[in-house]
Length: 537
Image (tube, rainbow, N blue to C red; front, side):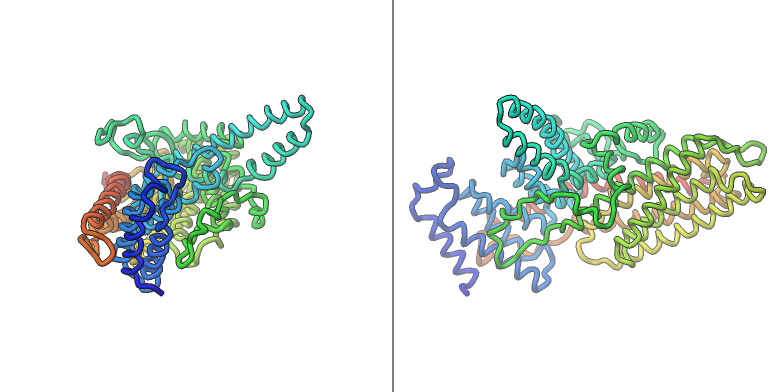
């Protein structure tokens, strides 16, 4: 096999061949004769990085990124170069640069459904939640508009006598578009990222201009604030439409183990045909389905928990409040959703995982809410003291699960920054939201934050909140390391020139800075809010 340096030399020599064949203005050809050499060389470097377990910022991946950047300068219309560069920058943790390359590809219309898989996971691991939500929303809009258009065009085809065309369109809609796996996945992403939208990321805002402070739930989503009640009701209302993101709650609730057969995987994997030596591992159909069901069930629990607490009644004269039809119905809905979530999700994660531990925290807090609101309604043993005692036991178990998650996270050494970005929407925000929602309920029962030394339930919830704060603080530390990782090279190497390498290093550094700037404010807010549980009477 030729050496890497020889391939680089041959590629640069090829740039002098037939200079008029592939002009930069997009003439008759999209590619240059030597583009295949760059693609091959970049794959060799990625293979070296994976086999020899290099850190994601050391020489091989940086050289691959630099070569692809230089090649795109000479051949800006070759889509394979962009796809390869997108993958390399994603591995380097430079999600913002990867997203800008994806936008340069000009993916639009039906291609959004088939090609968005190239960038969506990277947007989440890069903390670009606003971009992920907007791209996912464009997929929802595509399917909604296609559904309406096909009805109109199929009707016109029937009126004009083209029966085969009408059948072809309706079959396409029924077999490919409506059951799209990408549509299902996008619904889950929109729901997960809703509370993490950053108003400063919208296109109409000038670069560098800040219009508002970055806070949880600034735009949408549930995040443990008073407005959660209104938002929960809106989510419940919007969930009636198939093409709305909240519909994922119903789809997840009705999902079965073999439910994946219902969905159509419309991803175009052929666009990766140039990958020979190193193939990127994309999410499998089963992983996409399981992730979507997880998100739908979790969001369903949050909505029901918020609405149950809103309907709760305060105790009077030390006696449990009388259960009303509304509180009974809402708590029953939460209990059934919780049983469904336990059945579907308990076996979907590794036995020892952060996701599994934090999921158990959400489950325990749902149990706490139902125990405190309805308890053993109608039985003599149903007293306020009994409800508090049961809640304390559940909270103590939840605290242990938080500590388990913290232990698992500390033991995870690889790509902690990407892991933090991934955990934030799927696990951290739901646990925080449930903690704040439970605190509102406790305040109603006279077990507020200031009673942590005199009320057992308030003390147990404070222990949970402070343990969770410790975990969030560890996440912040991991993001600081993610930002300041030292790069393996910064100047000229055997394969690329110093200017190109410096440009790539700057792009990686700036992208990681942007990731941290988008994640840290949410984590900082949680730390501050959770510190309030240390208050005393």
